[in-house]
Image (cartoon, rainbow, N blue to C red; front, side):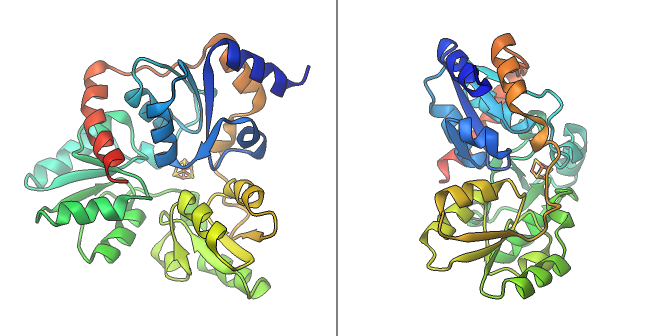
Length: 301
Ligand code: SF4
């Protein structure tokens, strides 16, 4: 029997759902019940009626699913799949920053550990960071934005404000360089350049469109253009091709591959369902506090 058939049978037996991030490998995207970005996956986790969520992504995403569905079993098929950006911030460091700016409110990018989310007033994704920041700024509040300095720079420019920033970054997006975009444009002069706001400002300034992975999917579907240079983790290209078989996609850099996102494979998903591993657990007080900031994120859609 094929491994995908075994997964399907076990999934039914265990009343499980498979959620996969846009950066997962194509074989995982193809067997998932839902493929999306952090915001879409969070929403799906909060409304699924399945009792088990197999989360194909990285650790902070599975934590977010657990926080939103504490009564459910959330499994991360590869325990060590983390996010280097999320690991750049810790609760002690954030507390120290907050103590230096007692009047400011704190907004964290969803790419942060649950213990950090528990210290924040608001959580956001790249899809709604600008809208959330504008809402807070309208109340004349200063914002501490953690941990992604480049997403913070992009949003601050759009909102015409300053943030108190943490100096974190995504090692994958920050290695997409202006030379990569220039070369791709030379090779594909008709292509529109779409990049993720985790890229550095010298990349976002070269793009036609700066948006989340879900925004990329929406933009490409409704665009009359036929060719696109994609400045984010290359896994999204599988989904874009599936949704738009008549269009062409070129990675801005074919080295933009997140090793953590690629740690999960079909064998690990099968093992995960067979052994109910690796289960995400969090202290109740951390979940309760983090849920407040995540719920505000889901309300701003
Ligand atoms: S692509 Fe970057 S932000 Fe996303 S999980 Fe990998 S390291 Fe983290």
